[in-house]
Image 1 (cartoon, helix red, strand yellow):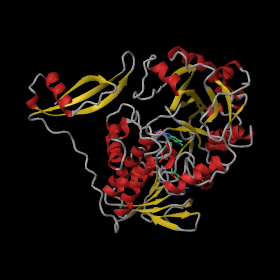
Image 2: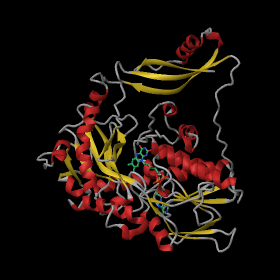
Image 3: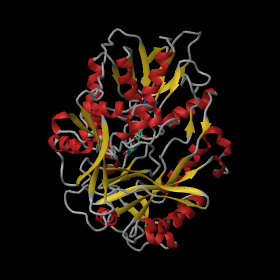
Image 4: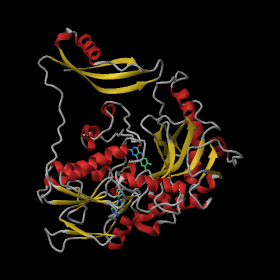
Length: 516
Ligand SMILES: Cc1cc2nc3c(=O)[nH]c(=O)nc-3n(C[C@H](O)[C@H](O)[C@H](O)COP(=O)(O)OP(=O)(O)OC[C@H]3O[C@@H](n4cnc5c(N)ncnc54)[C@H](O)[C@@H]3O)c2cc1C
């Protein structure tokens, strides 16, 4: 077996015959000796003439064939139950792993199935109403269902990323996610994938309970007993093991912990703005004016140290739209999503600055919820600017110069935007760094700092501002046997793939303890 690199024109999709020929040249053997040549990774290189750089793996006669991923989901109709609270990536991949282990997942999800969820999401714009249990963050598939579906993660130490990607492909995602350096699925494909996963889980005997918002958790009365999990509709479920994968927006779960005196910790997160540029401008910059139809739309990732603090781009969505991702009716929270083609006319990204416990003077009285209350206060201020989900916005150049914008460029954010002085709405330490960072970014991406770009408030749900502490070996809560905080809401993951990996890790940890 040998790995080698080969470039191909960006518009050319090489056939297996071409790959085998390339392998025969790279390995110095006749074509007849190459059994197979597989793409390990494909990355775009637009520094000069745009090409795809392929990392290829050649299997010659006598080599072991590539590893096959087989997912052996067992029939679990009569198996021991594990309660999974939350049907986001962490809860979903935990549930698939439970099926593999022969255990029955009972998924309690406060939101609705993906189809009903679409109706509630469109009501945010159409009627100006947020359903507190069914929105961009809550419902089947969790926060990532209506997103760009970026699957890029640096968290390779958390587990086997291919295990997640291959299951996503098996349930309907594009094959290219297995090899692309920056894979993404798209908001049009993700809901179908989540629905196929649910159908599989149910067919194997797992249970899905939508509209099941967990409002109370009661530990077992004695060692080896069962947790009682109470839902808002009065239904009560019990199991020895509960995976708590409720995401970073389930503020009521953190409040439940505080009310019970259970351990929680404040955790740093990041907060800032969304910026939106015309996509053609980003394409021009990144492709050095060589972009042409058929080329993928350009992305960017930027980071700078400003006043001793990292300021960085987050969740960049090429060809995407800005969405109202609040879970409360008195908050403005922005995020982005793109269809699989990323064919929209705008490019958006969060530009955020890290927030640490020492930054939130005045919020100490909230204890472990200090950063959460700080996050809430900024979101509420953005809402109060217009008393609606309309986002306060400013041209990037005006924002940096401290000047109100007399007009605003067109914007993809459906609820609408109002010209506002964002500096007064953002915390000072964030605003001052953001005002300095855009001209600095322009040195790396010439043309980024432009009056055609819009800066909007606020990007605040980047990761959890709270951690639910767990034992690093058992992954169980440090003081509550049988309760497994999991995924982004527990503070142990950020993003779709790392949350999915955490779900898998938690099930592996439960099974390795032989407590079932
Ligand atoms: C618009 C948007 C775009 C995004 N784009 C990307 C992207 O492109 N790539 C990426 O990697 N990440 C993206 N993210 C972030 C990503 O979605 C999250 O990191 C990921 O979904 C976290 O997974 P999770 O399972 O830990 O939590 P979540 O996905 O938040 O899932 C938690 C689930 O628990 C449910 N729940 C909450 N409370 C309760 C309760 N009391 N009872 C029962 N159920 C409950 C919720 O309804 C939800 O379904 C995006 C997020 C948003 C909002």
